[in-house]
Length: 382
Ligand SMILES: Cc1ncc(COP(=O)(O)O)c(C=O)c1O
Image 1 (tube, rainbow, N blue to C red):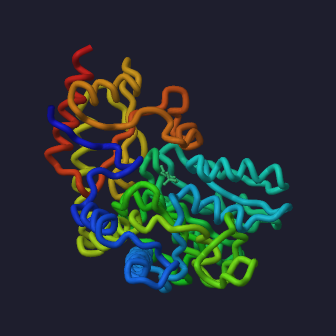
Image 2: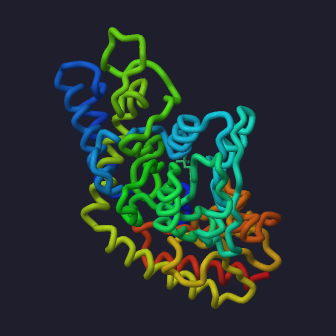
């Protein structure tokens, strides 16, 4: 059966060839532990990890690769930032389209006296920056926004929010899980404080990789303490970044893949990636809108979103649709709430969930046409 993969917002597949190659090379030919020993295998592992830091820093457009802290995913990066910053009595402002990896730590932080407010986004996921500003209180210390919704694809006005945070002297944490490797993050001339990213989505790395950019002057309480291969006579956690936040052996094989993914993107260029994505997205939206009974959610204009489109179909549940696409056509999508009940509530799809179609740079126009025609068959064969 023909196969097509449209679950890239969960994790991208396939990866560029270089990603498989670099991970295979690491496993077979390198094999040492980065930053630990002095033999050539460990030194080479250290070099590969540093190259991944450099490639990630270039894509995030942050100057210093050493301020890119590697984690196992965006969730760990968001937890490191949130728990590392908030103190009892603090107030945090976020939006109504955040992922549970923001909402759950914030709710949990309620038990140690940290309050949060959720700014309501529009039904297409859009955020009005003045609404966010109106939610700030004298005790507010932190603003958290996703750069793009993992449900509706909506791109949030990051530059405006960064401007508000800077004017009001607040820390800004950006959840770039859906945008690192896909959209530029350099719209703030003052630089962003904290950027959480994941390696296994648009950066084309493997699962188990991610990171947090920690801006100059941002001090976090570590989430985890232990061996770093540095300052070993000292029982105190080192102060230097990234060691301070990277205890334990790194996933160097995964980071070999992440580095290769980030270099692949740099070569393709974010502009070229965006052009391809917009072309496919326009084709997908047009195709979906031509099928009777299909409702699409999120911004009408492709330029206002990344290539993620949630849909519902009259008379067919999202899980039924996902199963038909998978079993009859070999097409992978994802039904349900996508770990973002808040976003579904905002879109009006909390009760049913939605079928999420998410594209990556690796998809083709031909695959989009196959998806649209397969859906048309499913929807019309009632
Ligand atoms: C917007 C957003 N934030 C955070 C995450 C969590 O990413 P990870 O699974 O890499 O921890 C995701 C993943 O689905 C996401 O889409």
